[in-house]
Length: 318
Image 1 (tube, rainbow, N blue to C red):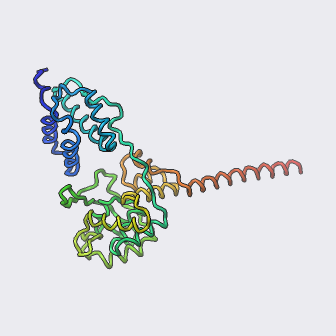
Image 2 (cartoon, helix red, strand yellow; image 1 turned 90 degrees about the vertical axis):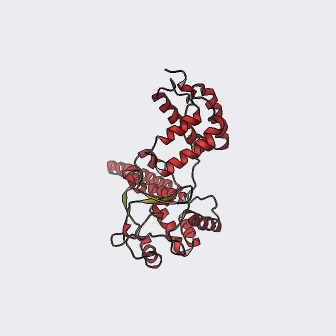
Image 3 (cartoon, rainbow, N blue to C red; image 1 turned 30 degrees about the horizontal axis):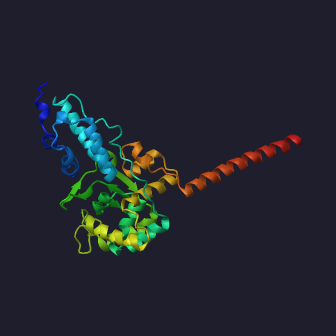
């Protein structure tokens, strides 16, 4: 191995690595660029790859974790991937990223809304955005899926909707329409019947009649943006006294409610558009309502068994 190869700096190699990844999605590339420029390069960018010791990475990660644990995990995973490529390229002998579980994110348990709060949050939104809260909760849709939903995706006759695309935004604010990340993301969902009246009313009053028209528009008739939705959401959650709820928590709430009905992991995976069981399992939390159902079922089982025993004893005596 040429000893001079490892003299390239983390910044130089990181930029080259990103440049040679045309396969990355736009949002992923933006995230990597942000992590490199804001989290990795300030402390490690000037160091040569051959001089990047595990102890240096351990200290960097520990300091970053104290400020923002989730960002630290993302930055470490990116750096580790880049270092593995450097090993493959023959620039260094082994990766210096040896901090155990440093790339594992441990997000805090997200709160959920009650059924009454879902209704209150919907009513607190502007009239043309009330449906977006209901679909996020009862159909468990992601924000991008809601923003990308078209009239042609909804079948009011059979009360179903087809998720075919999502609409997100780059860091510069540009709208970006893309396919779901995985095949599991493309799915047909049954719409709860109690939403149909609100859905049909919304389509009639707020959605243009072209099949490709977006279901959710701004007040002026232009496609709804994340910023406009966020402003309305923050006002609504403050009004109902739940400032801790993020918009994504509506999806989390809906999936938790679905799990509480007894939905299987496979059913939750389909509903959520997940391709792995581990992603769906996080929503199978115990809830007070579901725990009471289980307790009542156990009570019924015990009562039945006791009754059978008593009846059996009586029959024997007779």
